[in-house]
Length: 157
Image (cartoon, rainbow, N blue to C red; front, side, top):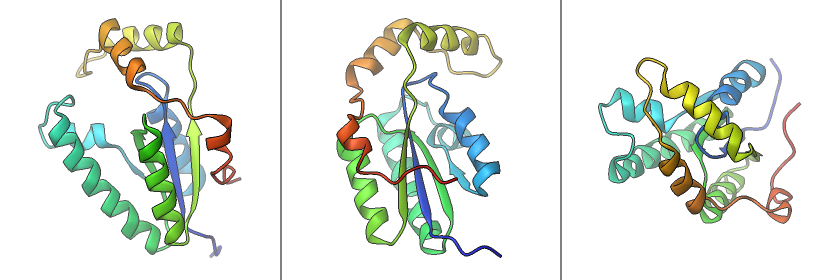
């Protein structure tokens, strides 16, 4: 068995950026545990746009992530991490517990996000996202700067 340091991987990006695709690949590559708030909200029967429910689910998943890190796991959080303060909070807390912390920023041009979302909108069971909603998301998003990215650990090989 390989001895490795616990690691938290934060996936940062807008809807359609590919967070779920990357997370599923990393689960296989890193033998990681993936925690996706959207999937939990859907499974619990909540509206994905219910901000109170989202906050509660994300808080619960963060507690679970911390317990997993304490046990030495690699954990992938697929929250999107639109705000710098949230990224800082997770980085500092995970580091305080001895974990390495990665921030994987999925920077995708708006035109490509719109294309991907339009395709996804036609999939059975998908949550329909409009161009207006994507614009609203973009307006709320704080992309990480290079200085911020430098605060995180490099990706695990």
